[in-house]
Amino acid sequence: MEEKDWEASSSREEEAGFALDDDEQFHSGPKLQFRVGSSKARWVTELAMAEVEVKRGKLWTTTGVIHSGKTYCFIEEALFLSEIGELQMLGSEDDEVMIPLKSLYEKIAEEKSGCCWESYEVYRYLKGLGYIIRRHGVPWTSKDAAITTPSGECFKDKDDVTRLLEDMQLCDARAVFDVYLPTSRFKKSSPGEPSFVACFSG
Image (cartoon, rainbow, N blue to C red; front, top):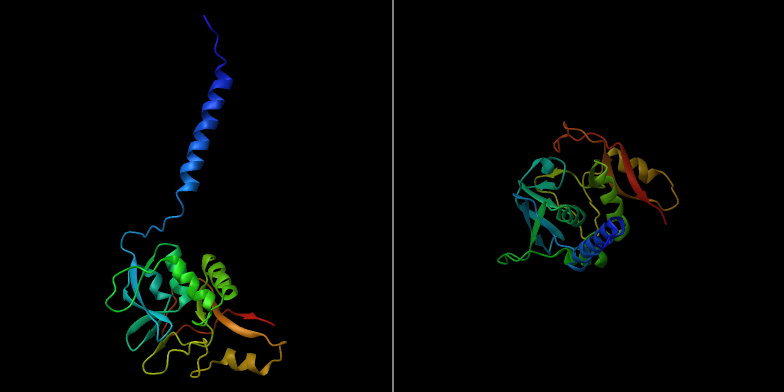
């Protein structure tokens, strides 16, 4: 009767199993999976923003801006929420086809929506830590003021922090995001002053 080296045999089988798992995992490619009941938004090219059509979850209390009763989100917000499966981005008005993540990445790379890769990386990092973030100088709510220009600048309602930063000479630093500490009592109608402002220099 043949003796079997059980230790060597079982380790070989485990290695073969790992290889198979790795093949299945890495050769299938990433798949975007939305959560049940995720929100839906439609990209509005003229505004370089997404208009939120279906809001689900508490995330909208700290995400997006409200303009004339409608909720809009900037490209960085739309991409972040799409990455975590909380938002389905749709194309033009009559188009029910979802915009793939690749297209959202391309919109960031084009830098026509007021956000570049560096800004998005900062946004994603801070949002991942739980901070409440808005694009600098853009009000959380507005009734009839312009939302923003494609460059991300806002020409109305400059707050105290903005004025203070403009008076300081900080080697060409430009404010990018207003950042608030995480809190369940946050209100867009009365957000208060940001905890800090994320700036880029150069």
